[in-house]
Image 1 (cartoon, each protein chain N blue to C red):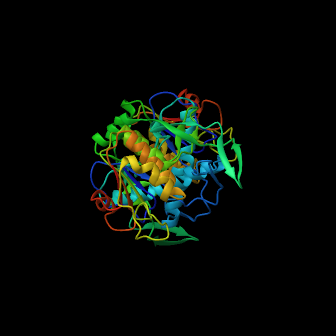
Image 2 (cartoon, one colour):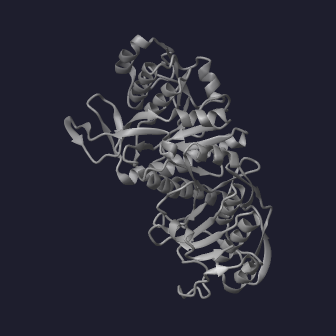
Image 3 (cartoon, rainbow over the protein chains, first blue to last red):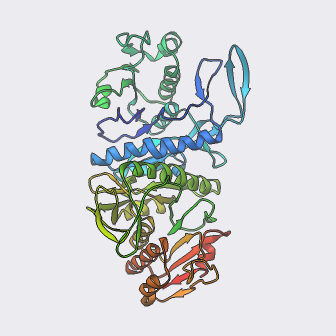
Amino acid sequence: MIVSRSVAGMPKYSGNCAVVTRSKELPATRFVTSPGGYTSRVTDEETLHLIEMVYRGKINSEIVRGLQRRGVNAIGLSGMDGGLFRAERKEAIRVVENGRKFLLRDDFTGKVTTVNVALLDLLLSHGYRPVVTLPALGTEGDALNVDLDRAAAAIASAVKATAFILLSNVPGLLRNVEDPDSLVTRIARSELKDANSEYAVDRMKKKLLAVEEALDGGVPRVVLGTANIDHPVRHALAGNGTVIE
Amino acid sequence: MIVSRSVAGMPKYSGNCAVVTRSKELPATRFVTSPGGYTSRVTDEETLHLIEMVYRGKINSEIVRGLQRRGVNAIGLSGMDGGLFRAERKEAIRVVENGRKFLLRDDFTGKVTTVNVALLDLLLSHGYRPVVTLPALGTEGDALNVDLDRAAAAIASAVKATAFILLSNVPGLLRNVEDPDSLVTRIARSELKDANSEYAVDRMKKKLLAVEEALDGGVPRVVLGTANIDHPVRHALAGNGTVIE
């Protein structure tokens, strides 16, 4: 399972794995922080439709196009398509702003509950390469925003992936976010929680939460690698980046 | 096979058929007319990406969402996805403008050459309902704009559909486009070409070309029906609209 943040970082594709796409190319939206320090995008209905336009219509299409050009029979899917991944809507999310705690309602976000492994197996066994993106399918048949790193972790667990690779614009977990040479190269599973509270900031906190969920879900090995080089997947699979196992 | 122009006209869905989506919700683009009187959208690379955003990201997602809400396990696909339908790029298109004929090049349009029936069968036989839209997959792995009514006709022929229904904002072929009561209710296959040159204007000309291609492709019955009522598919299948067989 591969997570690719941008098309620039699109891996030279090979093998029997799926690609999950996310993007920052959304119009300015509100981000909130939970009491635990995790940031989330606030998702009203308009933002949700923009997510469909940008994630599914633009970025996912670009990756499918890039793979088709390389002779890979890619197939783009959101969680809505064939109920590929389903989520339960959060009734309210706990937020801290300027030291004040409150509950945010009317938010179209959720947490992945089930993955349609049968659909992935069906496509993979017939030579198709799923490229997966947002949104998730809600219990009422509605679309829901979910954290895509965590959704990818849920998918990696569900398909019993042998490795889960998260590519981003940094080489992995950094001791000092300003210093690309401060890479943490190995984290033992037992040290993951400590590493998260000690070193991770912003998005990386949630990435490490996704890592934890993938390991809990039975994935034996996770690599946080850079997308900004040639063959980023091969590079990460070779152990370059932050390896957690 | 169902062609739906807009979400407002989305059929109450039932049965073992696919849905093809198109939309007019694109920014102002240039239309040209062929010597035969058929209009086409001029497609530069930017327009092609807008087509992906709007057709695949917006309209297709809305229909998938609407079907999922009604308990139908819809799966949205463009021609790019799994090579669902492939097209050959036109080297140049012949255009007439202000009485002057010329060749237009650098246009990302094509004509559907093959349909991946195996993928449609695979999904349909496992309970998924394909919702199909633009663009097509080109021979170089690139995206191509094609006429969606004609693509739908190619798909209907390929899957050996028993009926091909084209829904739009008019009740069918009108003798006088200004008068909704001038509906042509039946056209024999042998009279189709004459009916096209006699009554059809603008988009309807190409719809009738698609009808002809579906009949030539072995589809026994085509209905042009209105999308602007409840149960438009049932309505059209009952013979309301213009029936060509």
